[in-house]
Length: 240
Image (cartoon, rainbow, N blue to C red; front, side, top):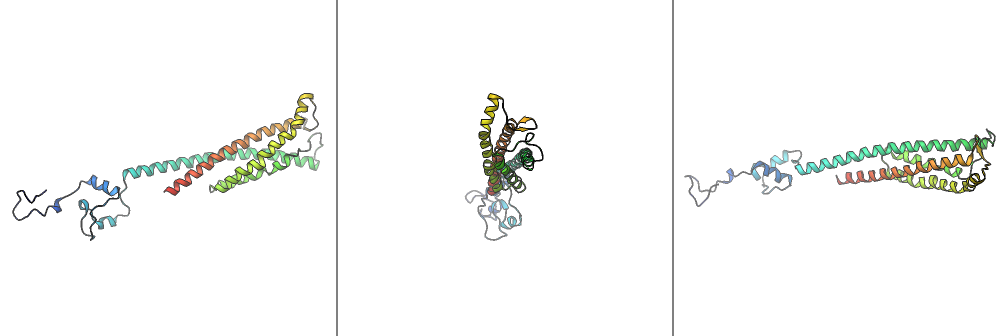
């Protein structure tokens, strides 16, 4: 770089060094990535840092991408992809549990219809217990769960979880308490007064209760994980 004090060629006073001053390209890109543009000229044709003009920047559709920012965006994209993959897997598990619960629900509906319509004698299909009637409402949370899947509707999923506790788990708890005296009598004395195709109705329905409790328990567990996944993906979209 020229100096005013040192020797200089003839025809110059040392003030024309600015057109020869340049900044290395990697320093230019670092400054642009950081959004720092010192010395921005007033006129479009004038040069700024290292020969980069304002007009040149205005022609660019997008500013240069900083490697660190690109890496962060890549991490966010990978996180969103993993979240979507996890959401699909959880939906599949919940659907399987809903179909299992639907099968149990149809069994109870069949018992109630056969006993009330007297399609078969009561010694073959016993009259239903009281807890079986409110359990028929357990189809409601399954419908809410299925409706929440197409658009990842958080409200429907929350309603499904709440109604599962009210219409599914609560009747099962009440049913286990209602049938406990008959089960105790069957265990101690071997006497049963209600039958379903030759089997003790208490034994058959207790088996159904045990299976249903596990189905609804896993359904609530996977629904909670799916709800957390949807919340996480929603927050990541807001950050973008």
